[in-house]
Structure formats: C-alpha cells, structure tokens
Image 1 (tube, helix red, strand yellow):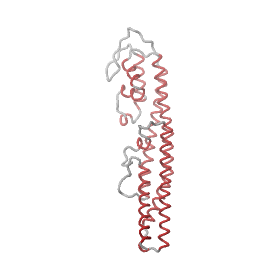
Image 2 (cartoon, helix red, strand yellow):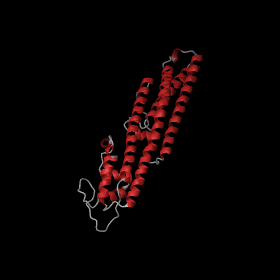
Image 3 (cartoon, rainbow, N blue to C red):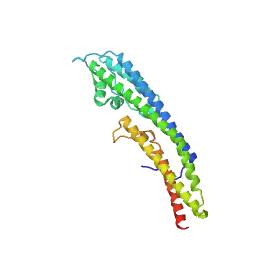
Image 4 (cartoon, rainbow, N blue to C red):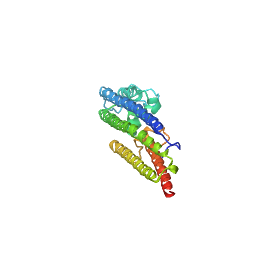
Length: 266
C-alpha cells in the first residue's frame, strides 16, 4: 500500500486533502445519479418499444458503427436510439467512457446481448424482457453505489474533524525539546506519544473496517478495485486516508523513539 509523499502532513494539509477527497466523492455521486436516472429513462423508453417476432426472411444490416440499418429492424433501431439518447447521453459519458454503442452494450449488458442487439434481425419479446431485466439491474447497481458513496462521504466528514486534531497533537508533541526536559516531563511525553500512536491505530482500524464494509455491501469480487481505489485513482497514494494516518503514526513513533533515547541518557 502506498503511504503518500515524503512531506509530513500537518493539520492544514490534512484538512485540504480531505476536502479534495470529499469533492471527488461529490463529483462521482453526481455522475452516478445521472447514470441511474439514465437507465431508468432507458427502461421507460424500452417499455414503449413493441417487440416483433423473428422471421426467417428478415434481413438487415448489423447495427455496428455508422452502418445503415434497414427498415427490417425498426425495434432494434428504436432500442439504439433510446440507449444513445439516455445512457450514452449523460454529461460525463465522453470523459469517462468514450466508447461505441456495441462496446457500451457489451460492458453493461454482456457480449451476447450486445451481439444480439447489434447484429440481430428482430427485436423479439424474449430480447425485450432480458434487456429490461438487465437494465433494471444496472440501475439498481447505481443505487447501491450511491449508498456506498454516501457512507464514504460520512466517513470523510468524521475524519475531517478527527485527523486534523490528531495532526495538531502530533505536531505539538513533536515540537518539544526533549534535551532540556526533566525526567518527569520525559515520562509524560513518552506516555503522550504512546497515546497518540494508539489513537492513530484506532483511526486506521476504523478506516480499514469501513473499506471492508463498502466492499461487502457492494459485493465487490476480490480481484476488483475497492471503493477508494476506484474513487481516488488520481491520488498519489492508493489509499489516501490510510496514507495520512500512516504518516501520523510514523511521526508519533518517531517522537516516542526520541523520548526513549532521552530517558535512556538521563
């Protein structure tokens, strides 16, 4: 796991970093809301498209790229129009996906259904039912992700108070002059350093538990990116919050070590 830059964070830097993470969550939440609404709109449009039983004599041009589509597949043409005008029209689509109609179908509905919709000869009832079912699953998946993003936002809000305060306490203790301190003061510093280390470890454990809970709630497979790696892909650290906590833990341990050396030399 990455542990961030070599620069030791203080309370202001930590506050700024957490604010950046919260903005990232807000931006992603807006995008997920747009996608959930887009899939809901697509399902509504889909319900209005009448299926047609497949006929052996139907011939059509595949719905791939910009190829012309024959009038033999009006249902499939309507599905494409509905999909492109809803799911593929969210504001961030070009930035986040920038794929073609067949590629998007394959990513969201699976390759088999994508091939059926782009090279088939009719939009039959079975295809319509399956497309509607999977579109509902994709919509609900976005709703689940929204719950997780809300939980992440709450976690960051709580850390927005705890981590800067912890950083200030570590900075305050790190600024003491152990060389000119009496034995009693050194013992007090040693105890404070131990308490700070324990506080850091407690915060880290809670953060790790939150990440595991997010993975469980979203039913994320082991090989798939978890929420922080998905959200904070542009951050220097793989797990930016844990990196901040690890930095503070190292600083508290460093102070404790200096105090122990001073006690030994007393």
